[in-house]
Each structure stands twice: as C-alpha cells, then as structure tokens.
Length: 71
View 1 (cartoon, rainbow, N blue to C red):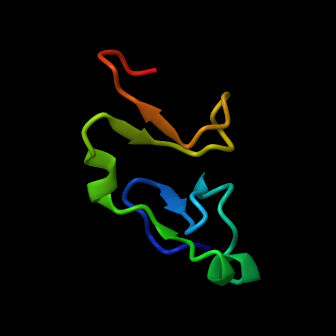
View 2: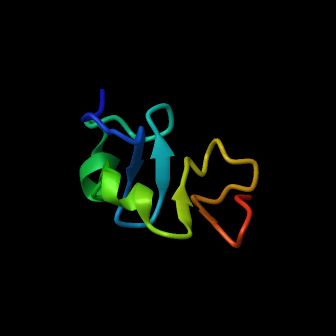
C-alpha cells in the first residue's frame, strides 16, 4: 500500500518515477532508503514537463518534454 497520490505517481530521491504498480511497497526497505514519496500536484503542472511511470513508458523515461506537441 502507498500513501495517496493525486497524480498516481511516486518518485525517489534517485529520480525514479513509478506508478502504484511499480513503486516499492512502503514496507520494502527501498521505500525509506531511496526516499520515495508521492509526486506533488505542483510537479504535474510544470510548464513543458510531464511525468509518467518510467516502467510503463515504452521509452523507459520518466519525463516527457513539451516542444509544441506532447510526445
């Protein structure tokens, strides 16, 4: 189980971004060691940047940059 996340995403201090299915469980030692927490709503509104689960993404990236067209 994870803490509630409005965006449905979690990130670590290592820069990993994962959805509920791919983030470590809060009882997994990785949760604390890697500093996992819900991605704040404010991060979902950064101009030109969109976060998504890098494990679900076909390119393995956690961030998509906006250059006129969402990729």
